[in-house]
Image 1 (cartoon, helix red, strand yellow):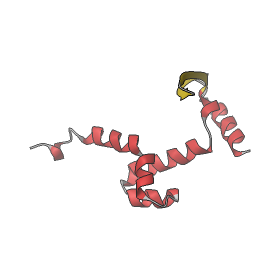
Image 2: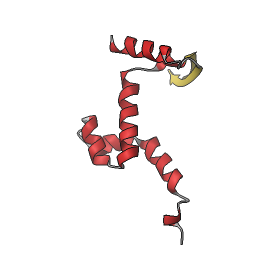
Image 3: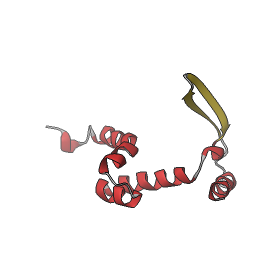
Length: 98
């Protein structure tokens, strides 16, 4: 029920661009193209919350607790792209220069 409602809210909010999702199933690449809101679910909301919380606080332990992960390692895996993006963003920051 929640997933249907969140899709409806996203459709009303105008998240209607076409979006392609690539995945491998049975060794074959599948490309699924639908309106973006159809891909959004409660998991999207959970992941977005965790990513935004982490980006604001840079506190991996607190993010892990909010996610109810039993291991920080799980949270690190969950946020891997976010951590890499953060590193890329700050790599040229003056703090890290000679």
